[in-house]
Length: 160
Length: 120
Length: 183
Image (cartoon, rainbow over all chains, first blue to last red):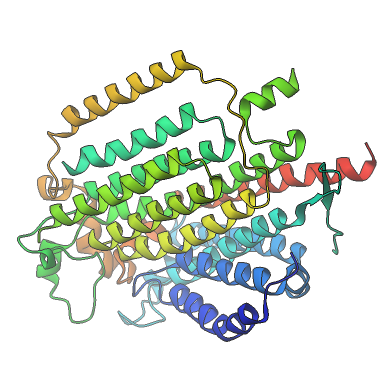
């Protein structure tokens, strides 16, 4: 994948900030408005996919390498589990919302609902990195048509 | 009439998964079945009012009258379960597409009867 | 215009898209027709008062279309028509028609627009709707259900997604090792 025409690249350069902001907004206000970690994560993953399609695989892998994506995938799941275990420690129940019980915030404000925003951020990280990972691994395998009509399967050079 | 139409969508997906030879077509059939089940679950939780505005999404705003909200809000539980189901469906479909690409690289075709011939 | 009429129009639209996606020969056209189904479902979610699901469905459908087009483009998409297995085809058609008949008679009793929360006072959803804001502090009841009341469900979802992604990675990386070793 070598990127697309300059028109696509220019449009992608303009819209990438707005897509990222929309994803972050959906994630952070997931407990107040429609949205949440799943929606924000998928939107951010689609931003990565747009950049990969527009600028090519090398550009995307330079700023977000595959090992980092794999690590972030695990980090999201781990944050989720750590919050659950902390709920067990402080609240007595696995997944107890101990922050809301001890330090309740004002309703309808950004810093309310205890552990729910933390869980939203964890799920956003997890979904975004894992979807980007599955897209980039599919973009690596490619087919090259030989002159005699047969097909050759080649793996791109991996930079890790 | 609505639930049978939703069920018909499921049967279309089942027909596609059972009869088509192309692997991508089978994945498409599985995706259609998944969509039908998700839509069916959300349809089960809808609470109908007199007009279209009498049903309300289960989201409280600062201006919302709470008693009014309990009367009008639709069931949040199917929505919550379907929300996770959609993302799982994407992951499983991505796994199926990966298997398709692998099969194409191994056999050079998407046709499953062709694959069986090449294997045996 | 009532909700039933809107839903029937959207469902017929979705059914047409699904039938085209199933029956068309060209694979790229089939993949684009599956987009009709997904975006139609998203509009249906919007009318059924599920804005969370509509947002997620639109984003997921876009990613799924990109993945499917990635899988089908520049591949050998002409399928050979050697012979059709008529006996199997007739069996499947009879099975599907029987299923449609069964569904028509079985689901007629189900009344649209009357969920369990209106019939049962002690249904868990009633508890979530009434106590959700005070107990969890989250104004979005769907988020409070998936991340507080039923967070085990989300934990299971996270592990299923993790397993699926690891499976895809393992399947596609296996070729790389094999090719590098020299065949």
